[in-house]
Length: 286
Image 1 (cartoon, rainbow, N blue to C red):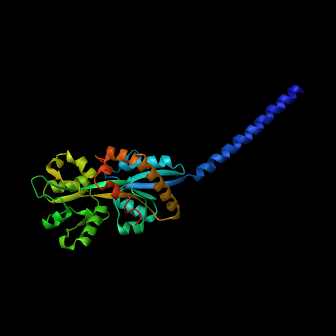
Image 2 (image 1 turned 45 degrees about the vertical axis):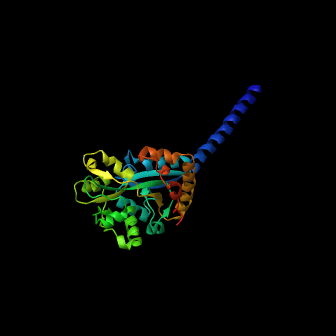
Image 3 (image 1 turned 30 degrees about the horizontal axis):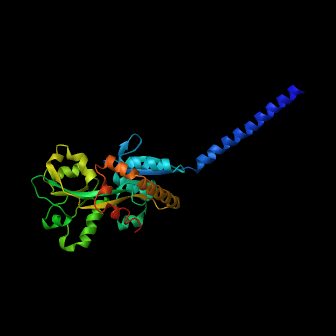
């Protein structure tokens, strides 16, 4: 009887364990189903902000996305890099949920897409040829009749100059649109004298500065700061996502993570520049 009771107990134990394991096995797919895959796209030629790295995104936004992905277990980010034009086409169609790069504010952009709170600050500079005409402000470009390097029409710098022209009709800058163009190619056109001046964030200029063409250039002091944002396709799923991202960005600013990757990738701590505290997140809720 004792042996029989022992065997009965063992069988009962395995039976209970079997049910427990079965429930665990049944539970795992349910948990997995709750994890939403988020398709994130970034330009493939925008160093040091975004560039291909393995099967994902490298640079400032590569690090930031991986940290946010880690902080938000309810989401899984599927990263890809492509041309800037393709990023926006895919974002508009819903192929991509999130576009990651140093996207600045524009009225049309904020109307067309959902957007996060600020995720970085860009330090704007003017780049001219050594020994050539110089500029230390946007007004200088107009007054000195400098030729500005054409800017991609889907680049935030294009909207930035458009806005300046609307607000400064007496000192308008001649603005020419173009398709995708890397910072290296644009700055080369300044160094060879085809154009007089280019406007870029300091971090986009720095990778070119020590190259042969870059050594022919000079950069101005900061002419201002611009906030950057994640852009998201407008749908109900992404409304919840952007709230989660904003909450995490707030934590990452408070704990110093944004400053850490800024110093790592952007060649300076833009959060320590004049008016940085006042500027950061100042237009996020327009």
